[in-house]
Image (tube, one colour):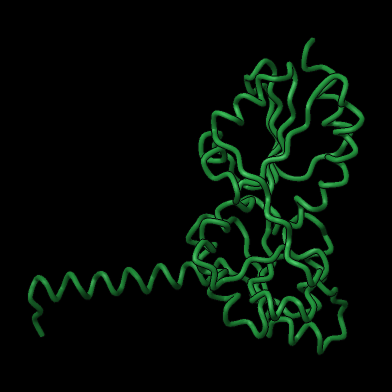
Length: 243
């Protein structure tokens, strides 16, 4: 049976799309609740809950970052996560998390593990959950790009914490950053920038994979780290910044 050139091109496009989907699926590992817990316990990756706020309010897996898959900016926020870290994603029963997992593979994430059966399977296995705070997070302040650069120039040494409110690793770093801010107040400034509230700044400074910590000396970036980092490293970088 012969096909017209247009028909042939259409068939090739469909085949290519099917192959892409198949390749994406082979890079996603569907795991049981106990396997999911064991992998996440290695603490070398990020747990991601893609359910709605109403669902999350009923309980979530401890330590999970939360991104509503129905949000208009879901893909943009996905792109702010660290692509070189394993992602452990789940939803209510596994459908939405499978969709999110395929999107993450398309975006270049290195390893994605999907919780088979979702949090329903997690609960059935009697694994622990935590209740998320009922009150919405306080809206982060926004700055113009010029105002941000002005703050960088106001002190000789400035450590910037680029973060988001939904990012669990960012929340894990929060008490360390706040303690460090007080500790180094005489010699440096510690500036917190929510990249969701300040997309212009995030784009101008090529911020990807929050949290990102950047050290500026006389307004120029001299050091950067992506992901969780210990207080001693940050302290040392600030102490040696002017030497």
